[in-house]
Length: 248
Image (cartoon, rainbow, N blue to C red; front, side):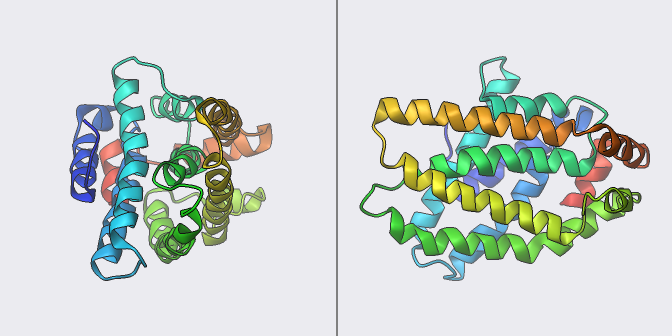
């Protein structure tokens, strides 16, 4: 059953993080980080950080349900969107680095799911009222960037290789990735909310195709960057639990 509160979302994320699948693959990295963000959104709602706390909870829950449903479908052998399929397939492979796993999950969830979720809880008449609270999430995310990069660095000591290759793996890369993805998500939301059912379904397929391609490029970039990522991966732990402990 879909979640209806943030507390239910947190409980579902905990179940994924504690599952045997997370311990035996790399599928637990993204939900570990995602839980940290969701907890901060819950705190922000409780502290009156948003203009409309109940609306923000509805959006956060609708947003989370898309990931939770995709994960459940993947585990059950049912179809999932191409963006999540690329991410989940990578979660079963040794080669991607910690950062790649996290960026692939962020790509699928923000570039595809976020715009859809915002459009789901709004109408054309009231979606503009969501903009302030939508953007406030950016501030929460940016405030967490240093902590997240420090966590990654604690278990990935050769991340500096990407800087040498032009990958810019410092805080600014993650900040830009988040900012750009959320900017596109807002554009998608304001476009999707204008469409009828058939137009909405067709547009979601178009977005998914693009996001899947972007995710697969993140996971298998060009030869030089791929070589650098391979050396980075050699120095990262093979025990997923060790990485998840660092991220939580």
